[in-house]
Length: 489
Image (cartoon, rainbow, N blue to C red; front, side):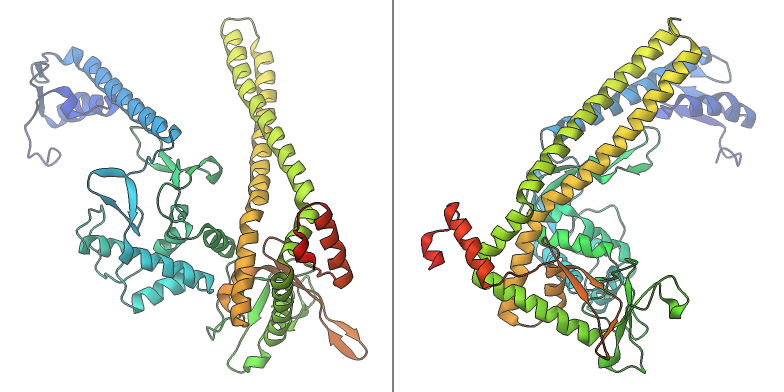
């Protein structure tokens, strides 16, 4: 309106009501408004730009108002940091599938109608469906989107009612699948803003998240959530016929480690569909064919799963003893080494921060030359960068090692489900199998054979012992007082 000549005077109660950003306020009151012939009046401070009254004090008012805004921002951030340090929830938004009850601001309760949709999304993902397929299916079944659902129950939301109330988006499904809070925990520190002046959201690295367990009832079992995250890393592309294999996204080349693509065409019958190395490229690529038919792979995997399921059903304590003996002591020692190394690296990083401050002060007061300061600062910065990278890598290794106990529970659960059904399903496959590696075909006795390595969740490659080895391990367990005598009868 001002630029269109519709305004002659702008009057505010006081300068703080006009703005709290000194650069922009100075530009408007000293450049823009005078050039447009507009009078600016602030009643409380007795400022009038036409008469010049109070204008000399305007920059100081602006500075103090901006300082007040900065202090308020610091106080709010400090309160949030304190709440987070006490293990309390910081974010005010409630995830789809949960709700708040009046009078209880921080606690989340299950919103059953939405919770059923969340559980179904995770179940369908375990069954092999990706976010795009899930979004299409939810729209086809006329399931309200989260925003539309919130409007339908009168829950406040910042988003307006969508035109298509059933139009699920791929990123909405992805956000649900990636939300760890469905396992019953609270996640703080996922994002921040540049400053109180710039509200651009900055996503923090996952290593910096603060996770507080058991803050609300879980919608999704932690084992299921972790397996879904693993499946999301190994995305599989759909075929032109939209047919998928039970093992899509899990099959890799034993030599070049690339994925084996699943091929299904209208001209191919079900027993002709096959996997082939992505780097083969009809003989022009960097790898050999590594070919296997889907039905053959299914037979191989089913036999391996059935063998492991039978063994665990009969000798579960022996199986657990095997795994403990295989990596127990080494894993404990490695975990301790990683924790000590991380602690030492973090202490050195903190010491380097202090050294930075010290040499800066010495340089300012003249005790340290500019040349010497620049060389020392570069050395400290390089060392700190290496240490930060080392800590990130060690945190990742420690997280993977700690996850194995969770994966073992998921493996045993999947084996029991297979024993009850005796058939492979996408959900069972995705619970049991981490990776399948196919070797290049070998010709033996005028027939080609393909070696297949099946890496199970938590335990990797499994070699089942014979009766003599089982008996020996049971004796070892008994002697170590790890197995009651009646189990060896």
